[in-house]
Image (cartoon, rainbow, N blue to C red; front, top):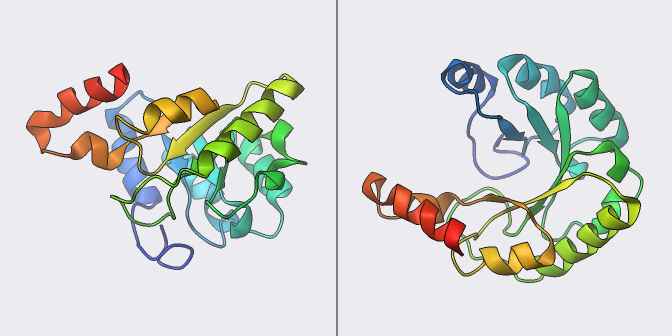
Length: 182
């Protein structure tokens, strides 16, 4: 987050680079920055495995996705709540992941926007129609009550910040188990 595209500032490439030696897990980097193209190489070099961008963050989404793939990384597109699924019409075959923001990005603890379920359904239907191997990730308001409807709509990857960290470190394992059970 850059304090411009969204009203908050968070992790940059230096933090990704510092964390990379400590985990073999995939680093899925969601760039809520504009302009985004200037930072693709820095995040790839820092160790990002998946780089996800917003269509509104640069003038040429197709070119941005090609650049991400050219850097040897998986490419993702993130859609804000008001960004229509049609933004994917001519780039879906270029992406590995579609991230549906089920809140307005920038702050944790927001409530899930139920209208995004229809967007997930529409995108899953198109992915399946084209026979593509594209994950649908959902970020925002994911908890024990919202994860099942998102799965039923066609999502298969989830970001659950507040639901995971609620109650402090002693509760993390139980919170994650509850999400998995739901």
